Structure formats: C-alpha cells, structure tokens
Image (tube, rainbow, N blue to C red):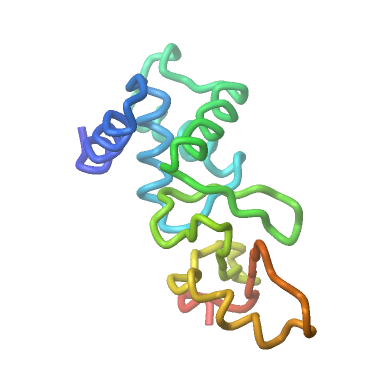
Length: 153
C-alpha cells in the first residue's frame, strides 16, 4: 500500500468514523490529484487504478457510492466542494486554508480546466471589503480567478 493510502487511512481513522475501502480510495485519489476533480474525473481515476492494480470487481465503486463518500468526506472536513463556472462540482482533498466562514478562492485554468485552491483565501474579506458599497456586509465569498496555470502558460 502506498504512503498516500496510508495517510488517507489515518485521516479517516482520526475522523472517528468507520474506515472503509471506498473512503480510503477516494481520499487517496483526491490527495494525489493536485487539483480539484469532477465526479467523472474521480470515477475515471478510480477505474484506471482498479484496472492497473487488477482489483476484483467487488472493489469497484458505483456512482451512488461515489456521491455518498464524497458527501461524507466534505461533511467530515476531509475534502471540500469547488463550484465551477460551468456549474460542475469539483472536489479537492483537505479543508486546510479554507476559512470556516466560507470565504475561499480558486484558480481555474482555461486551457487544461484544472482548478487549484488559492492559499490566502482567509484574507479574501480584507481584499473585497473596500469594493463593497457603503453599508454592505459580505457573509460568504467564493472567488474564482480564470487564466492559465503555470504549466499551460
């Protein structure tokens, strides 16, 4: 088993919930992805891994299990949802750097379509507050910057 799978297993165990193969597999994929993934991309990665490792069909994840486990990972704080401009939900591992008040930013590459978390997201309110009209109070922010990532630039 890889270090990423070991790390995923430990994170699920630390959450206090039941450790399942599906939770570990999905969290490990998100941890190793390096960018937010759509449901389809995550399912494709899991299918490829199953084929590469010649796992029995019993280890396959169906679409319903995928949705349930992703919801659980988000609820447990082990992953977060990234709403995209094209209304497709993407998922990324971890909640570090994600402000508990919902202020968060992402960068979406217009070439490769990958989505990356912006590290200084907790400072978003400080950046946006001067732009608001007098008397307006921001309660939640989700900023997405579009452009070319370092790889595609």
